[in-house]
Every structure is written in structure tokens, then in C-alpha cells.
Length: 391
Image (cartoon, rainbow, N blue to C red):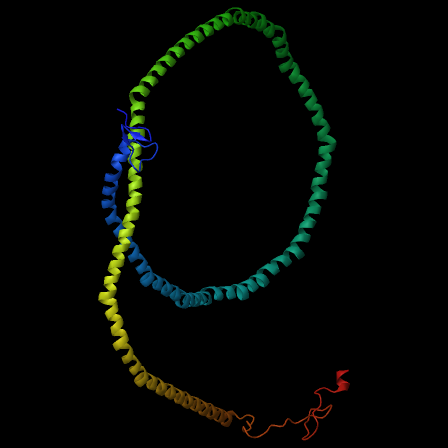
């Protein structure tokens, strides 16, 4: 049975209005029911999705964003200074005392109490003593031993080595070399190697070539038989299994899948329009049932009452508090100045000191004469050091 017709006709009837080229009658038949069913399934999902999106945005705007700003402020204004203070305290208690102990106590004690004396002893005592001992050992022990080795032992050793080498070759090397060259090598060559090589070349090589040709021919026949059997099996599988599966996938499953995917997309968009319409209706009802009365109550009742409280209570109380704070600060400043003056007078009465001039009495510096350290009232101020002492 053939389901796919030409793009213009379906059987003996005219093609549907939304018929697309390359589609079969099955695609056109299942399109509308599939879209209706998918729309009924997708509308609740889309409305729940839009509700979750709105709730997530409201939660982010109302809770998460202020919470993030508050956490950032706490980190910058509280945790960072506290961390810096704890770090400074940890350094002051755990690091700086040990650094000071190491730098100002252990290093000087070890340097000037141990290292410097040891270096001085090494340079001034041990080094000259070592050089002297090395000179004595070199001239009293090493030089005679070196002369004896070079003049006596080395020539004697060379002679003994030549004699031992000649005797070793004569006794251990030359007999075995002659035995191998003139007896073992000819016997092995002409008694074993030459027959084995002749047997390999004249018998085994032709026999191996024949066996190889026979096995190659048998292998080619078996391979041709296997290729024929494999080709037959492949054609049988293709005809009985692959071709029906491909036809079902191409003419049934693929059109149904494309229509379901297109139906899901269309239904998702339609559900979005429906969800937005429902949301606008809920927003209109909430505004007219709750927002408008709340705004009228705020504008009609709360705003006038707040203005009355602000003008009648808050501003006078704020002004009175500011004046009281100013008076209190002035009183505290005056008391602080009085206590400071009394403390200076008490200190002057106990230990003495220069008399502090009053605020209204002018202070005139007493000038010094040139070349002297005494001061003369009314004299012109001169440099502290005379020209004669300067140069």
C-alpha cells in the first residue's frame, strides 16, 4: 500500500490547502489531531512554567538581590575590617615576637658567640696548621714513596707483565686457536654446514614453495566461498529487515516525529499567548480588587496623616534635639577646657615650669646680640651663629 502521493493529488481528490511537497496523506491526516492533543497537554505546562518564571523574578528582585547587597555590605564593612584586625593581632602575637627574638637575640648571639670565633679559629689556627702538616706529609712521606714507585716498581712491573703475557698466550691461547682453526672449523664446515645447506636449498625450499602455493589456492577458494555466503546473508538481511525498517522510519515514524515536534512548538507559542492573557486578567483583577483601594487609602488617608505628623511632631522634635545636642557639645567642650586648665595649673604648682602668658598679653621675643648667647631687651634680632664662627 502506497501512502506517499504526488504534491498535487492524493488519490483522485485535490490535495489539502496546507499540503506541503514531499509529505504523505498520513502526515496531513494526523496533523490536526496531534496538534490539538499536544496543545491540551502543553497549556498547563506552559502556565506552570510562566508562573515559576514570574515567582523567580519576584523572588530575585525582592529577596535575593537585597540579600546579596546586604551580604556584600557585611563582607566589606564588617568581615574585611575584622579579618584585617585579626590578621594584625595574629601577627602581633605570633609572628613579630618570634621575628624580633630571631633578629635581635638569636642571630647576634649565634653570629658573635659561635660563628665568628669558629671562623677565626679556622682561619688563624687550623688553616696554617693544616698547611704545615700537608707540607710535612708531602716532603717526608709522599715524595720518597713516589720516587720508589717510579724508579723501581714501575720498570719491574712492566717486565713481569710482558713475561706473564707471553707465557699466558703460549700456554692458554695459541694451542686452542690452532685446534679451532685447523681441526674444529674444517670438520664442522665440511661435515655439517655444507650438507645442511644443500638439503635446505635442494629439498626443503621447493617443498615449501609447493605447500605455500597449495595453501594459497585453498585459502583463495575458502575466501571466495565465504564472500559469496556473506553477500547472500547481507542481501537477505537487507531485503527482509533493513528495507522494511527504513520504509517504516521514512514514511511513518519520521512524519509523525516531525509533526509532533512542530505541534509542540506551535502549542508552546499558543500556550504562551494564553498564559500571558490569563496573567493580564489576574493582574487586572488584583489591581482593581487590591491595588486601587490600597492606593486610594494611601493617598486619601495615610499621606495627610503623615504630613500632619511630620509638620507637627517630627520637625519640632528634630529641631529641639539638634539644639539640645549643640548645647550639650558646648557644655562638654567648656568642661573639657576647664579640666585641662586645672591640670596644667596643678602640674605647674607641683613641679614648676615656664609661666604660660595669658591669651591677651603679646609675646615679644628677646633678641640676642651678635656673637653672644645673652639676650638684650629691645635689641634687633641677630643670627644664632656669628659670621666669624660660620666661616
